Image 1 (cartoon, rainbow, N blue to C red):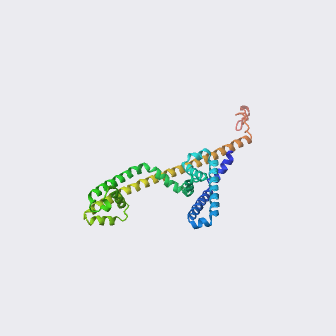
Image 2: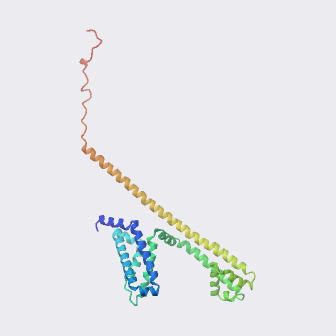
Image 3: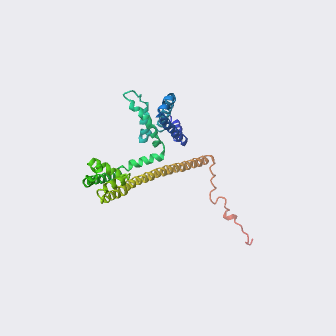
Length: 291
């Protein structure tokens, strides 16, 4: 495709109106898929749901093709474009009995909102960026959970076998306490036999729910701030490049105008030699001299 036509397609694809239209189609697809889960509606409007599904799929295919035409090879260098391409491509595979699982990919189309909406894309990118820091915090949380489960199983096995009868039950109980959901009931049942058990539960909640979980939140927030700053820096660089290009184009246009004016205007005539029009010594005025 000629560069001129490719540029026109890129302008259309990157325009806010086109992006809003894609978001609207994804939202319509999500609503249709939600309504289709109702057996009564699915039986009554099966043809309508099928037509809507085919039309939306066709819109997605045309959108992907336009983006490929607009951006060329750069389209395949963006991981989010691969995400959209896989989701849309999976929907094109015929769903036979052996490949009926592929029909579930229709419901993944709603996830395309993540790649279309810039804010959501930044959040997911920040989560992936925070994985190295999250790994250490998650390991610390799991070690705390495992240690507390072993201690609880040793201390309260006889007092509360329904919660700490074995290591598996103890792990599940301490995970429940970690979520701070219904933990007072667990603590009260154990404290009925072991009055000092509140020290164990209070210490575990303070260490995990307050310290370690807040550490996880801090790592995620730091990663999101770094992602936002990186995005702002990228936008500033793009704006600076646009301004630099505009200034250089203006300077180039002014230079061309000056060259055209210099070519049109006549060259100035050289002045006469110095002293050519000056009076000679014999012609000097003799005013004031005696005849």
